[in-house]
Amino acid sequence: MNRAHIRLLLIAVLTLLAGCTHLREDDALYRGLGGEPGIQLIVDDLIDVIVTDPRTRRSFEGIKVKHLKHSIAMFICNVAGGQCDYEGEDMKKTHVDAQISEAEFDALVDMLRVVLDRHTGTAEKNELLRRLAPMKRDIVAGY
Ligand code: HEM
Image (cartoon, rainbow, N blue to C red; front, side, top):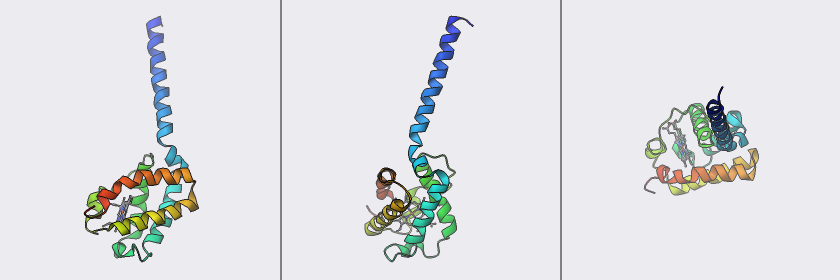
């Protein structure tokens, strides 16, 4: 191996290391929420609350809760930086039929805040809420 080869090898190794560091930073929230099982617990808890709470329950009548829990967990997993298989629609298509109001959206976020306090730390809670907040414009009808 000559000098040029060694230099190339060094560059390749450094690039790989930089990539790994990036990966670690990117999935920090995913790991902070307890990975896939942790996120599933959070979502299960949230869905149980929102399908019964009078402020949000009307949209969930006739919806298959088991499938919804799985689908939303996969979605949140990806939002948090995990690598999950979300097979659902985008946020606009998913919510358009339900004509969700701003009050309903805000009520869901309040309930999510309470659920996250039960499962995770303040930093993880705030970071997840920060990432979900911009989706309001796709989820709330006419927002
Ligand atoms: C940041 C807030 C929200 C996020 C990230 C979110 C995310 C999702 C996701 C990922 C799905 C599954 C889509 C699929 O499988 O194709 C879903 C479905 C649904 N969401 Fe939301 N959602 C949010 C807020 C809301 C609010 C505020 C309501 C109503 C109060 C709501 C009502 C529904 C309903 C009824 C479904 C089932 C739609 C169907 O199967 O026809 N969502 N949501």
